[in-house]
Image (cartoon, rainbow, N blue to C red):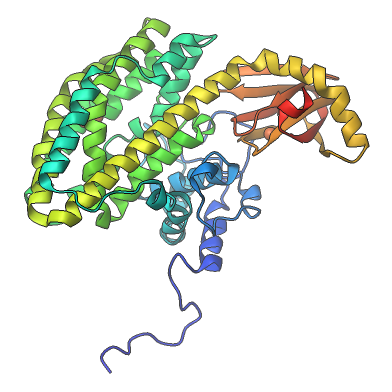
Length: 475
Ligand SMILES: [Fe+2]
Ligand SMILES: [Fe+2]
Ligand SMILES: [Fe+2]
């Protein structure tokens, strides 16, 4: 029988529905000194990405999330792992000197195999909800897509502010907020066009050449100084930040990684070419004004910032938006009809939804950091009640005792928590470039879903974490 191909085997299901296999791949991938916790708040190993792997076996990625669950810790952990797995496709090299074992480990055949098994599994967990979130009518055509996209482009040109720029300008410390925003852009900008360049391969007609024109621009026409990622690295350096990818890994927010992972998914898996065309039209078109708005806000907060990255995009993305429309959207629909039209609109809507989520995540994080002082005051106010409730068996508590230098890698919780230091000194990390010192009998409220960490500053530090649910019920 010519269709009798598969033999009896140990693994008879090599797909995302084989939970055990995918889970093993994830745990295996995460188990590397490159990803284990250490004591550095900024990534000191060029190939390192801290994944808090000891927590991963307690997480369940088998059931796709619903939209409202996007902010939970399992999603954040999945995003960190998935981003790191996608990097098996991208060559990253330090400017000088390489640690051979780290280089070998990062790109080992085992890790590549683990990544390729687990990436679709994590994408199913993270992105399946979009099928229900974004419901399209099924009659998109060349003319209705044109009309819709051109009206989006017209409206995008009129935009004068963005939630992110307002958050920067209105922050307690606009300079720190501006640097935090640069950090949130970094997962994408530091490897800019790498996901896109996956589509440089293959044989798919004139669309491929239109896309390649954009890729060439993004790569600076072979001039390293003009490569967009190089321009962004100069921006980082002028903000007093390290240009090394991904030095500030621990400060990438869930939303920033989610958005980057979406673009990774629709470029790594080539069956998403049409979604990618919709998403890239959105990105290139929205970027024209967004870059000007960000440039102005960033310059106000950081007057000596190198703005060439943003200036470059204000003009070149006018061209890229046109190429995306005339060279990708239109010919794709002309050739492939309804399938292309539906998928292009879907990619556009999905990318828009996820971009908004990412931007709002940043806005919420700035709000959380700005309330650092307030959160110590709320702690003082509710601490006696929480302690009493714990005594009555109503609130769970974790006791911790950690030595000098111990770092709790940044993470989030799904409910509000109260942190109470009984002895010693802790540097509570409220987020990027903001800390609160807590000594004996100090404490702070930790808002659910907000990125934070802790570093022990005394010989040892004993502290307690109370799971208080919703802080408002204690006020
Ligand atoms: Fe670019
Ligand atoms: Fe562009
Ligand atoms: Fe925590």
